[in-house]
Length: 423
Image (cartoon, rainbow, N blue to C red; front, side, top):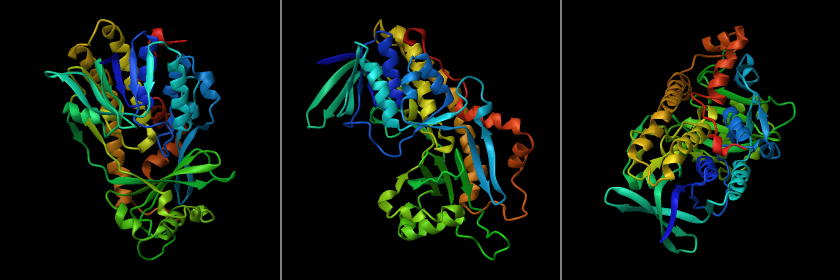
């Protein structure tokens, strides 16, 4: 019987950060990742200011700087009146006044290399968790299957589920979530970016009304797009009404081209570079939160505990903060054996408020902005129409742009590396 002190399922940002922190605390930790590598397209690539500070504390800031990345210093919305800044990250406190956009596989590779330097760390790729080992009601490890079909068991004092919103461990543990309705799904694709295009993040939502007094509804009703500046290309998040993916795909790829150009006319020269639906990946958006994140011998963190909306790209940041809190609270108890339920409850108690507040803000945005935009219910924003009230406020008082910047880039209750892990 193979054995480890802590088994972490999932080699994403939360799993790798937790594995690294526990290993630096001298805990025997094994991370199981079902894929052969980290190369997956359209995974979250945003590394927020609080995570950048954490990497500095871990002695990895210099290594991160060598990775190919793009700095995002402001977030903007395009109205018919022009491009309007809504969040200015240059006003953030601390050394990192930006969000870094880096391919997630590069970030995970850096974390894996740092963790591999610790003698108590093991990363096993091509190893998919299939279930849980139990002794009575207590989880005592996992069962797994490798890419060649071999099966096995790994005993552990603690199993931490960091395997995402479709978590096998969460389902096997019988932990139930509270679901919050969302109005949208998202299509992900790429478009070329030119040097004179707007920088940073740019959002555009259709009002459902033709500008400049045109008759009837515009084809932009129920549509929106967010353009994320990646240097030589835009990573595009095209918002559609929940469940409409098969209906809209049946209209043909030319329909997407037309809607893009109606929403953002200056994309007309490149919309057709999305040549087929094979270039467009669907993200089925979920927003939920476990009522209880733990059970005897098992703990969920990141998307396994709370699936986040893609609004503001905060999911990775929340997951990393969960991992830091878990390592800080559980490293000591793990040296003495299986942590008590009280210790596991402390992790949830520490991270519940940041999660609930962030999801609460996302739900407000879903209802007040995205839901209305996707139903064609936004007020017309044609020439001469006043911008929304919040936008007018941010235009009049530029310092207020630090508020959404802080919430997005640093968040509620940022965590810091425990002392044994610092370099």
